Image (cartoon, rainbow, N blue to C red; front, side):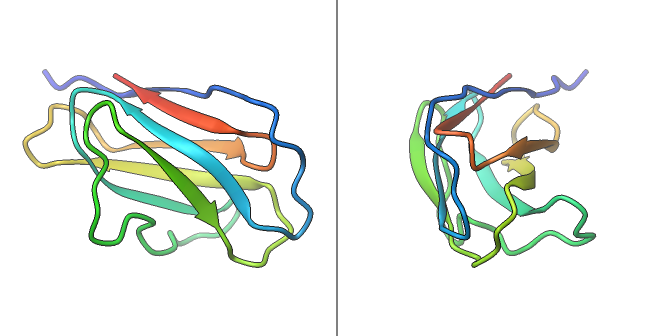
Length: 107
């Protein structure tokens, strides 16, 4: 039976962005490697490119994410894909990224 990743958002005051880059810290608090991370504004039917590119986020690591898409929206969908040897399922969540200072993913 595969474990399902549960997402917990940790909100830290970051101010409201207005047509500025969205910046937040993503922390991997699972025991699995996070290989791909996608975002797209809520309501967009397709995922934008993988934020990590050729990088991955190992268990316990954090990375500063900047979404510099020039949009003035705050609500984004997020998709987390783990390594093939992980027992975690692909997980999706939606958050207001303008209000977030950090986001932590847990098992």
